[in-house]
Image 1 (cartoon, one colour):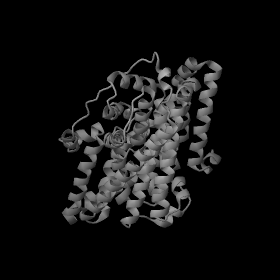
Image 2: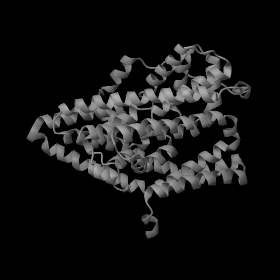
Image 3: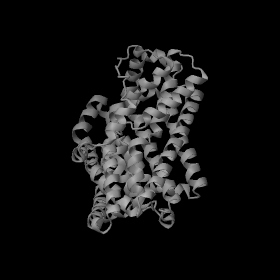
Image 4: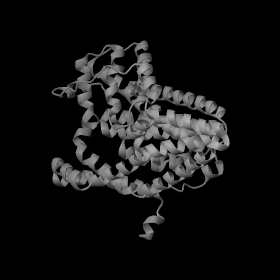
Amino acid sequence: MGWWFKIKLWQRVLVALVLGVGFGFAASAVMGQEAATQWIDSYVRPVGLMFINLIRMLIVPLIFTTLVSGVIAMGKPSKLGSLGIKTIILYLTTTFFANVIGLVFGTIMRPGAGAGDLMAGVEAVPVSTDPPSVTERLLEIIPTNPIAALADGDVLAIIFFSLFLGIAILSTGAAGKPLGDLFNSASEVVLKITHYVMEVAPFGVFALVSYTAASQGLEALQAILTLIVAVYLGLIAHAVITYGILVRFVLNLPLVRFFRGMTDPIAVAYSTASSSATLPVTIAAASDNLGIKKSVAGSVLPLGATINMDGTALYLGILALFTAQAFGYDLTFMNYVMIAFTAAIVSIGAAGIPSASLFLLAIVLETFGVTPEHTAIIVGFILPVDRIMDMARTAVNVTGDAAVATAVAKWEGELDEERFRDPAVI
């Protein structure tokens, strides 16, 4: 097996992704879609689910240990304010550009034109339009029981408690040093476990992607092919243009090296469609490949996995235009503005799990008076193939997290540029 480990992990993951797609389609063609889906679900997909469970196992300990350790590494609590302001401004800025790009592609490609006829007989899926209030969201950030927050995997609450704990350790001085050393050691151990888990990634990616390819089938994709193409092109344009400008021209760093360093997290994000589940891999790649130091990687990336959803904002914008075009809603300039604004707001804090953003669509569609019946039909029409687009937007979300973390790290003097420019190690 020595030859296997001589191949770079990102190369193994990409090969597994391509083979998974081919295997899924081939099995569907030979056995029939239903039989192939059942067979892969029983004998192949469990390997992928095992891989997801392994990386989900690491989410809470990784956020908790690396964030506390990262705060300690800053040396003084005041630096946290500067880092936080830059992080939030950058996340909001990239989300704004994602909205604009999504609306441009939705307007030019008109994926919803003529789609109304395709929806005849589609089973409507009712969705809720009652999002939690701003007050409720803010209150949820503060955990009434930190242990329960850790047990439940409540990411925002864990971030809040970890920041406070790290600041308290710093402020305590010599008395807090033993506890600080414990968290520093723990974060290194958890990152080492992440490296072990990533050796399973090629097998997990193959299993997950083969199931998706077999269960969706070519027929389902053909029905809304224009929409899928519009979403993919929009996401690729956002990744290349927005993140490209940030990394290459604003930070003056090699863009190809950035994307190569993020290959593993992008592949895992694409196969799992979960930015939260990809977080351990993202932190490891940011540290090992991009040279982002612990003080930034441990704080910016967990926050990004929770609030930075560029792909989701772009997707919701395109779906809003798809709906308007399919059902004949006439949109004004103010409608476009409201779609962009609402998509950005609801995407912040969207659950980092598959298809979660699809159920936020109702809130965006309300901005130009889409009826509940039309909303339910759209969700019912998109839901069967949402996974295909969800995979791509999750990959963009994760890429955006790393781009922002790279920028913040450089501006804070926490970026090892020599490591950034070195060949990827993960």
